[in-house]
Image 1 (cartoon, helix red, strand yellow):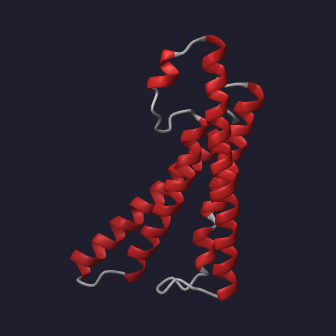
Image 2 (tube, helix red, strand yellow; image 1 turned 90 degrees about the vertical axis):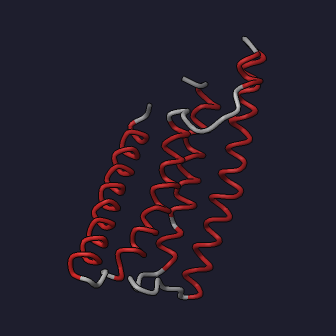
Length: 151
């Protein structure tokens, strides 16, 4: 595992800790005070987006993402390595095409339209930045595996 993946795991854990705190604060304000802090639900939702996308990049780095292993498990040697490279290449194409390029367009569109989060009043493009960032990280980890082989 690379240092980038290690730091990414720590960052996801920190985001999760913040999310748990925000949700607990929302529950506390709802039941103890009688009026929920409005920003907690929105922030928890946005943190979930970041945790999910960056967590998927972390899963790719650790080779712990969901996979159907019936065919790869039945192959050995060169055939297995070739199939692994094809799978890595397909993941790379998806990450670049959909996450990086499509996500960057979506971020640009959100910023250019001036969309803002209703409660937090932050640019919604900041929330969407998780998509191309996760795509870049997934692309990096896949390129590493294609060039240097899988661990």
